[in-house]
Length: 222
Image 1 (tube, rainbow, N blue to C red):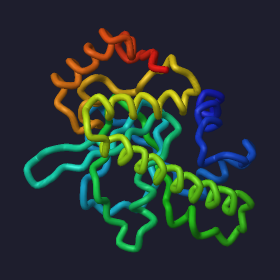
Image 2 (image 1 turned 180 degrees about the vertical axis):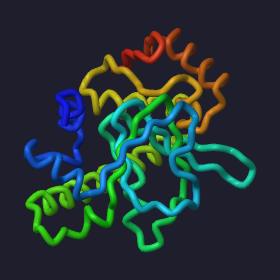
Image 3 (image 1 turned 60 degrees about the horizontal axis):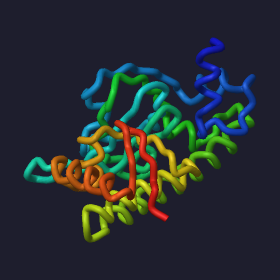
Image 4 (image 1 turned 30 degrees about the horizontal axis):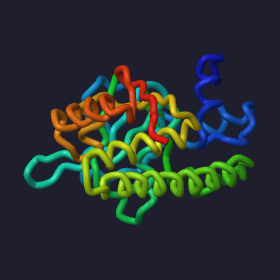
């Protein structure tokens, strides 16, 4: 394993508390494969059977739900080190309820969930740890979806924006924050019209509630 790949794997929460010297053996045991995707390329289709856990090594991935009329909702977004598809792969039916799309040029590692959950005959020490890590991350993903519900359930567009920025500020522990979404993606995440959101952001800036430059925001509200 190269030093550059080792640095990437050190940041993956699924591999927490697993010794570096065990990583190569573990990845082989779990059937590791790595694929590259171009921006906009579909990684997993809605209703597709999911048997592998995806881990973003480079770039970002969006989880999107499309309704019967073609309206798309951005449910969640994953950056380098984040998992996706685990919620569906762990179900008995293993059928995806959403579509995962490359939000930028990205590189994804896939691991067989069957081999994650079922220890091999060799009794590798890392199996128990990676299973524990997996269930912890599934719990965290559920919290992220609850955060999404908290944001979009707000009545006004301004309240949705403030709720989203507040959550980011709490995670980054600062009123100076960088958000991982461009304006179109942010509007999609908030279930809002982009033009209306842009006007509301400008009004909030004019009133001294926030300041921003591209994806960097400052929360001024006391």
